[in-house]
Image 1: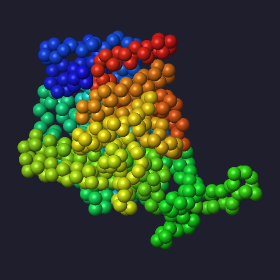
Image 2: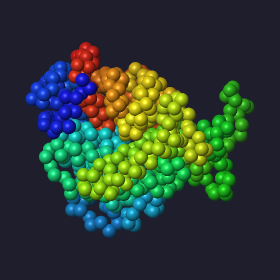
Image 3: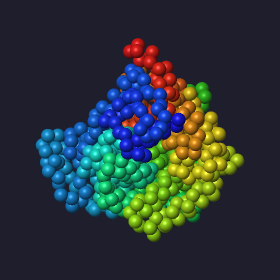
Image 4: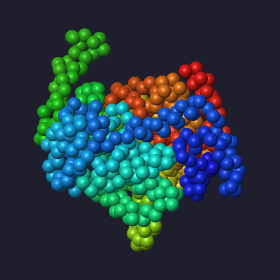
Amino acid sequence: MRGSWLRAERRRGGFRFRSLRAALIAAVSLASLGQSQPEPLAQNSSLNGILTYIQTAWDSLTRSTSSCGGVADSKLFAAPVVYLPAGYAQPRELDQMQRDCAVRVAHLPQVIHQLGTTDVESIQPPGLLYLKNKYVVPGGRFNEMYGWDSYFIIRGLLRDGRVELARGMVENFFFEIEYYGAVLNANRTYYLTRSQPPFLSSMVMAVHEAQKAAGQDDRAWLETAYAYVKRDHDMWTRDPHLAGSTGLSRYYDFGEGPAMEALQDENDIYRQVAAYFLFHPTIPAYLSESVDATGRRASGAAYAVRVCGAAQSQSSCEPEHLIKLKPDYYKGDRSMRESGFDVSFRFGPYGAATHHYAPVCLNSLLFKTERDLEEMSRLLGKNSDSFQWQRLAEARKRSVQKYLWDHEQGLFFDYDFEKGQPSSYRYATTFYPLWAGLATDEQARAVVRNVSIFERAGGIAMSVEETQGQWDYPFGWAPIQLLTVEGMRRYGHNAEADRVSTEFLSTVLENFARDRTIREKYNVVSRSSETHVKAGYAANVVGFGWTNAAFVELLHLLPPEKVNRMADAIQPATASQ
């Protein structure tokens, strides 16, 4: 049945539920809509428990920059400071926060028009960037509003009828573009050098559809949104975010040297990277003992690394090497963080060459942005704009077909525009062109035929390479499951979409039955939330915003009879708690 009874709510705006839980566990009759009645979802304690958890989590994960709980940053050890844009009048609610929380309020040293124009290192101590509205954070160590996380969180909020909160988050991104130069990785000062994958147009369209379904005339809001989405698109389609002469875009962080949040919070990651490159001398040189080839002194700390033989005795050890990582490595590392896929080896070991690639994910999202802008301009009566956005989207599609599609393998690959050759790294972002509607029917069939490359017992693994990075094998992440499933459904591959949905949903359910929480990521091979990550931060944090949202969206798309069978299979484990 492809969940058509669930999509009817969004399409017609005719039946809505007061809560997510009611929508998913109540019997729903669509006889009045001229459709057959689906099998009702059973009253199942495993579903009841997890849906209650998700519904209440929206409030427990809600923060604001004028509340005491929103300022703390577990990634850094710094005095709490909230920074206002330069010249921005201090809101009254911050006066109260200063008294109640012993938080300092300061202004940024200069007006910011775009990324890369601010000396972030001079903003000391690092702190929280002010936003006007409340927002939902991911959870755990992430106590700020993130760029791409928020798209999935907004989907979950809208599914639960929390339109005002979702709209406020989108308007926070407008505020970031206006006063901080871009949609930021997150609203902390040390993120003023980079963005995150561009989901802004998708957020706008999701909120617009929800407001339209509620009978709201949001033309003025859509006009405002259109201007900000254009500005976001502009950032990705000018230097230095251009991928050479390919007509595509790349990830690029404007900062230099080590990422501040990684120095204190990520398992001594840069020492680990330096040791890796010392032991793999055939990889392009990212190490320097003093200065790099251009005479430029390497950024960051020097690391003492000793190479020993297999016997591990002192006599088999070389003298200690005092080495530094070159600026080009740090540029790649930072750009990998803009991609959101930190850490994986997709763009070379530890993401060192990220800024040398035109990625499948980014260019699929920009194609989607251009299509959304085409639709927005059409709704606003801007017909000439609509034609221009259509033209840009088609040009990007041609470039994707030329550089990123591998007909023989039946997969999309990132493209190293510095070397002029495609990557051979098979990665789950191959499903992004399906989600964005960029793939041809033939390409979609080929990618879906190859789903077994990534599919494991618990869902879609990020890659087939086990690198000890959290964005590689054997780990699976909820947003990628959702994009993969929606991409397959878009091209009519519903049997595969149902199967992957069931695999991931049941994994989350089984782990929730055991520890009563939802995690950031899962091991889709062992179907466990117990993860052992060595490259990057080790914690599998709880919360968790985008997992919560993707869970309810995947559940909504799955035919009810399959939801019931899955939930019934989990029931005995839950009952024993």
